[in-house]
Image (cartoon, rainbow, N blue to C red; front, side):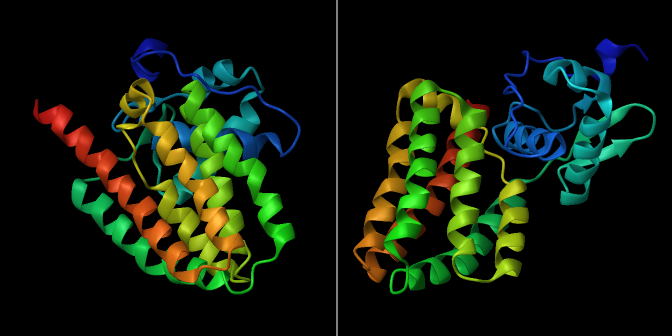
Length: 234
């Protein structure tokens, strides 16, 4: 089988340049995870390590290690001597993920409103702005990477590392195939701005508003899937 048959046959992937803030392995995993969540890397498609290595302009070792990490997260299935295939999720799977996220994310974040300190809010502001900037620029990879770091950092303030790990796994299994359409329409910016609203509610120690914003924000995820389903039906 030649390379064209094992690499992505869709549009070129807009994978970000690698910097120095994390290990190469972690940065590559973050970028690929976001590409899967955004639907830029499609279910059923087989991706080879050499093709991904060329996209990132790095050596094969950190790419292979990152892909093995993502396989353990349930995003890919390794295919011996060929590459990694994105695992497909059903609408029921995605609905179940949304329900679980609402159950385990909303209450602890709402409770943070009573205890969160101003310094923690200021630490999260740049991440919230990075989400808005990614939405404004139509950079879905940066948008999702910043969104992931924002929410996991916020959950980390609860002092429950197991909660952070579980939610991180659930978020990684999310598929947001409608993001591109929202970005083109300019409506993704409004969703991104909800992160600043959430920080404002937390800063005001408003537990009820924090809970309402979290529920609305997670609910928007299912709305993005619904838009994708309508597109497919049409």
